[in-house]
Image 1 (cartoon, one colour):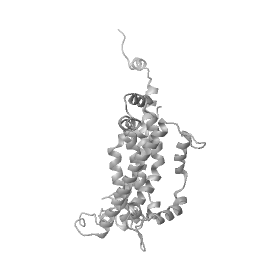
Image 2 (image 1 turned 60 degrees about the vertical axis):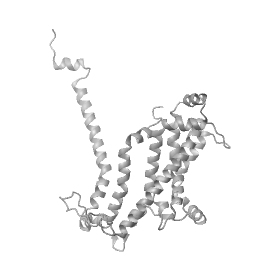
Image 3 (image 1 turned 90 degrees about the vertical axis):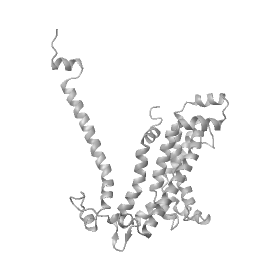
Image 4 (image 1 turned 180 degrees about the vertical axis):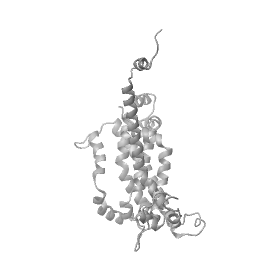
Length: 309
């Protein structure tokens, strides 16, 4: 009978002590880098949330840790009428905040829904059929859609301002929805075309043999399979629309002003109200965080569609 020693065990597993130490150090390095990057990414969010609880003196001195560097107060939320001691009182600022919040929800959700609906149809056509427009083929048409993202928004400022004035769309929700739809449509087409390319064409052909029309194949066969990609495209569009500031500030005034415009307006003759701005920013971040956590698996599936093709 052969005695079992640590050396023979290392030989049996095919891994020496040096290799094992190297593997452990590699894991420590990877996890250390991930923890550091998580800290770098989440620290601005932590700073924003804690700023809502700071006084002007705490903000200027850069105090960071609650109950250690400063005593938390509800000054940021009180300025919006959302603190525990003001939530049951009448507040014009709170009414304005809720109105801007509702405008952001309507504009972002409406534009994202339209972009996913139109973009899915366009992406399915580019994935399944061959088109020719002048010198352009499918790849050229897809690149044309994607190239619209290269154009700086400031270039479109004057044309849209004049067009919306002529069409009476200035300071209207429908005007913002249509503009946001055009803004995120190229991204939706790009994501959905990759999603449809991963679905075998044989499924379409088999469904057509069974008697389904092209529309029947699209709605009953392809769309259910491509649902993760549609959810990912919708969430990405929602985030982009929710955070959009330039056109919202340019084309809205009173009725359709969104939350990012209200966040940027927290300035006055006495300086910037950092605590109010932080409270508004926290309120704007919270819905996106909840959506990201709840629908994380759909986002990952949708954005990685076609990666292993």
